[in-house]
Length: 151
Length: 451
Image 1 (cartoon, helix red, strand yellow):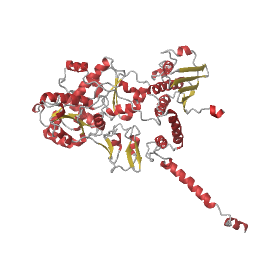
Image 2 (cartoon, one colour):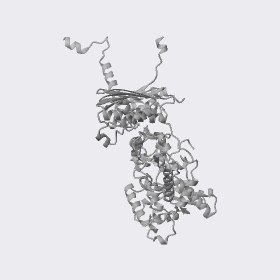
Image 3 (cartoon, chains in turn green, blue):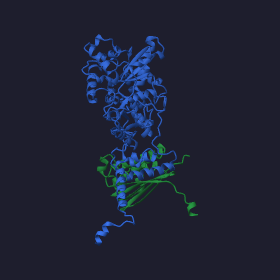
């Protein structure tokens, strides 16, 4: 009975470790995932959205956290992008979601990052977004993109 | 004609199966099997990287030859801007243009002149916000074909304007109809090309239904004939020639990278050359970076068209020569008045009529569930491969081999390291077997111990 009711969904999980101030991993992981999604035959607009979420989310971890991990889960229904980090957490999540609000330190701004567009961009690109944060401990971000919502 | 036409081909006899080309191909479109390279027709973008990489000159570009001129009553040469960089110590562009007449053409039309028109049109497009920013140049067909495969979501940003080659052919033929009274079909326009991608572009144009170009002749094919003529006439003074040179420095500079940006002259422009550099840049753009740039001039060949694989001279030498030549003869009144250019823009005469469509060829399976399972297999196999990316298996890197295995066109034992491991295990097994003594026989080593 159990065997009949359980249907295996083919899926793939990609994982990337993010170290503090590793600004390259964001772009690298976005490119890697993009290639994977192309190989799966996923539509361009979805690939583009996913790449933006990955880039911004990984960048947030690199800029603010001590270390963290990026996981991308793909099955025929949904793509989930998850970042889990150990770091300062987000003090005011409502403010952080506003365009242009940034808590990035000066040297990060000098490098051209931390413009306060990360979370707003992620929200715009995802169908579902859950952020779980504890000040002084860390943040978990889960973004979902559904693959068949237009059908 | 087959489904795919490509100018870049393999000279089967010359190929030694050395695997140099497979690692340089930006699309991973080449494999070496049974000692010979094969180009995957559905992937090739005709960029010519493999022509440069091959030490045995086994990668060639097939272009039209001068024989094609015989099919037309009136023949017009369309020299690429970079063509003029192939001649040393020339005082003006006239000698090159007249040399082309001397080898059998009835007329010439500089592609540089058409480039000035294209530059103006793109400028207007950006100014009037008629294309999504940032705008990409449409001039380099190898870059556009790369975008079709790897960056399809950026295609909507490509300027909807025909290439300078195409505009040159159309203008030249319309002029010739008026001048000669011949019918359009009797007039042939032939691009003198530094580039294999232009041959492919003429056969299968991307942003127009039919090309007005009747043939694309590689620079290397006619260079010897042309240079003889150039040497014979280059000492003449400009006033001794019938005036053919009409382009200004603005159009002539399209021969090297940054020339187009200067001509388009709109907002912040970024010019990048070399196909691998172009790929890194497009990856950045696709992630949403470089938002402040209005215009991207991207060229597959390092240095731009002067770096074309069919050119004769070193690209850096070529660029200096072209700059020198522009100083000598690039300053003259523009051939087209601003009013003429604005009219051309308003009539939309040289606009693209076809959208550039994405090409989906990278996916492992039509069915996504199957594709996921195949990808898992690819990951598993790739994880077990040595990661040397040596290319000895005939695939460009370990991951590409894993993909080829899953696609069913390669085997794990194609990997020399894997093969060696297998041989070692097998040898050990054989040794183990050899040590087993049949029960009916006495073990001689034990006997000696007992004694």
